[in-house]
Length: 371
Image (tube, rainbow, N blue to C red; front, side):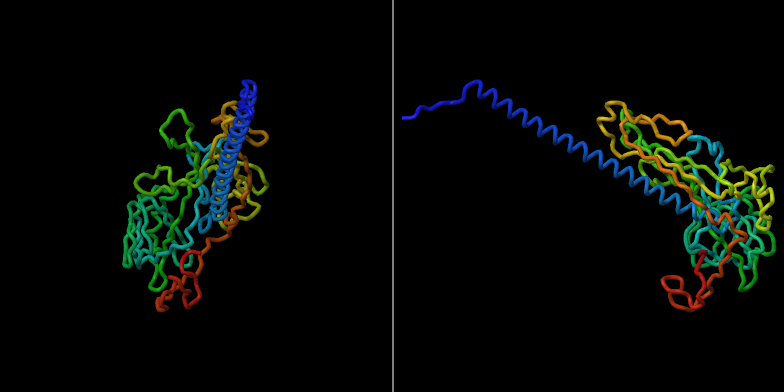
């Protein structure tokens, strides 16, 4: 009969030690794998935010100044510092809406308001409007003083009081050409304003966690025109804007008596083409810094990555530690700022073709609105 023999104490200790080492190694590998997954997820989120921001910004910059005098293509907010290192965090771009057009009724234009034959979409208070005489002989700008609902019949667009500065230039609407003529009306266009800024949002109301940065886009509409607007991209920590002349020199756009805008007819060699007016912007350099959507716990515990990176010659900015960051630079050419005349496409007057400009091309082959 064989004797039954158990494990000795030494065998138990060795076996337990080996098992603990194995479990520890597996746990460490799992933790490292999980941490790497979260880190990579955060990096992908940061890169996605950067792509989204660049797509939106470059699209609007390429449209900057469409349908407007080049001098009105960009807004320069009060306190905007311009081309210095880390100085700017806003970009204001204006362009005419490609898809909006409304005909002014005969004798329907005045300083206080413009009466249109119909309104295809609702408009909000603060909306910038451009009114153009037949043949683009004259044009002017104004802002709505109240919300207006879409309508199929005659509609009054009430305007803010003229101030003589853009966009409240409505006094010109008293001129006869804005009343148009039967069959040849003046037209109202919508000017879109895209006001980009970087804002921090406290999403969890916990002061111990850092606020999350977003790139916001506002339009200056409604009862609260100072509202942030809608978020465009998550994780954008820095937006740096530099305006360039034809020569490639950086400058800060200004609009004052010392820097009047060139006209469409101004010769190429005129000094007006080289002053600091926004009309002389020929390129816009964008520098964006995006951070990962999740912090790397190892970097955060070590206090690393605690600044927003910069390009050569610029200073870094303090920021929450532990986030991997991406610095990207691109230059966009706003082609509409080279315009030599106000673009005025021919609009369709087709009212007989079923579905014309609502899913079908008009019979006359002309444009439905704006584009």
